[in-house]
Length: 241
Image 1 (cartoon, helix red, strand yellow):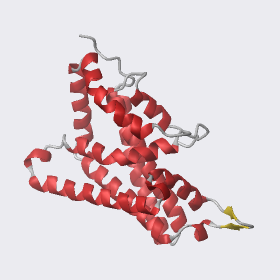
Image 2 (image 1 turned 90 degrees about the vertical axis):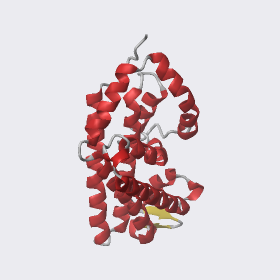
Image 3 (image 1 turned 90 degrees about the horizontal axis):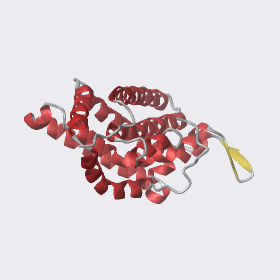
Image 4 (image 1 turned 180 degrees about the vertical axis):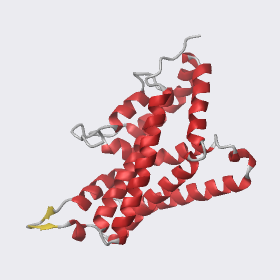
């Protein structure tokens, strides 16, 4: 039985989880302070950064079973330089949250845990749909332009507009609400030793699955990946992580 040569060890992946998890919490807290002090354009931009960290976390999760040359490794590499990739991955964050929840001891034994999870993820999807309804094209990619509008004065016609004039407070509140719900749900699920349990589960699977097993499982996922990450113009000049 041929074993897979994984791209990264689990210590690297766990470090990535921890870094994105805690930085997301800090960014959301910062966005709340900005919003409370009537700096809603900066609050919007900071909230988008938090959402990008969550998208990056989804790509880091893909490294759990990634070879050095497969699409999961490619998605992670692109997420380190492309805002579009991180924002695209947002649509699958509820799936990641569900996977993490499955290792919690309360998942099958405490109905209240399951109910709380359903409420949180339903609210997350509702907030996400609300933000999408405000974006042209119905895609989270538009958040990157909003982020820029919250940071910089920009030309409009024969003049310039400041972020305060370009960004509506209700838009900033909607994006903050999405970032808050996503980060608070992640925090709820990763605490109490669940990150360690999640890594242990991956370690067990790594020890059992052959390369043939992996390829069989991944065949079904290839189409989903292609649909999600086939983005025109991956913004090769993007350097912000």
